[in-house]
Image (cartoon, rainbow, N blue to C red; front, top):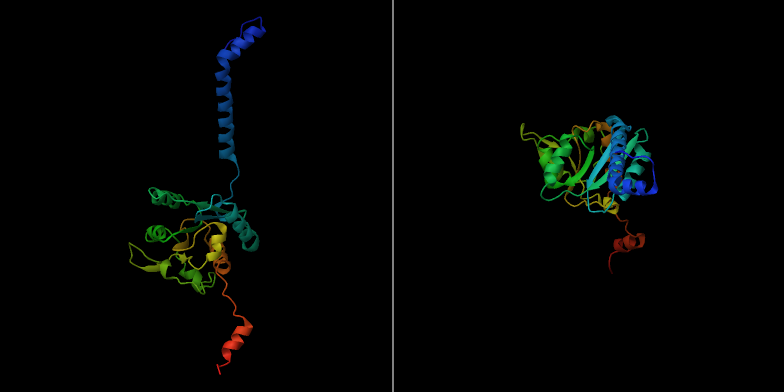
Length: 227
């Protein structure tokens, strides 16, 4: 790119008329370079300092579910640098492949996925066995039917509790995610098991439907035999 002297308005107009694309290219390269540098050098919390919740759902954005993650962050995980929640919609054709890639890359910690997808990764030991945490009291599963959460390892034939069915956790629906035939699980290679368990336990304790309390008057009437 060369500008001949003397510089006149006519030459400037001609220059930009024929060379404006060079400036646009230069701006694009500069922006791409800045974005690449920022992306590769920005700080990321280590795996043991963050918990990521990935929920299969129907909401258009993740603002509501992130508010739940913020609530859990403040309530039970204040020492974590980051607690995030994302709603995803798996494509019917490529959803299983996408999930396998995420699991292999240890993307996310706690997952809420449908029964079929849960079975596909649990049967291959892709999720964390949860029985030890139920037995030691870290997971409170009172009132939850665990039948759909068991999986049989394809290599050993051993049956283990690998997930927690979410059918009864209907309060999650207020945050834009489905619960029918869905299972909560933790990735085996997530890198932050204990804090993921604490996140999961918060959902178990706070997302179940509260049983309705019968009216005192109705109870009293029911106790009086008909004359």
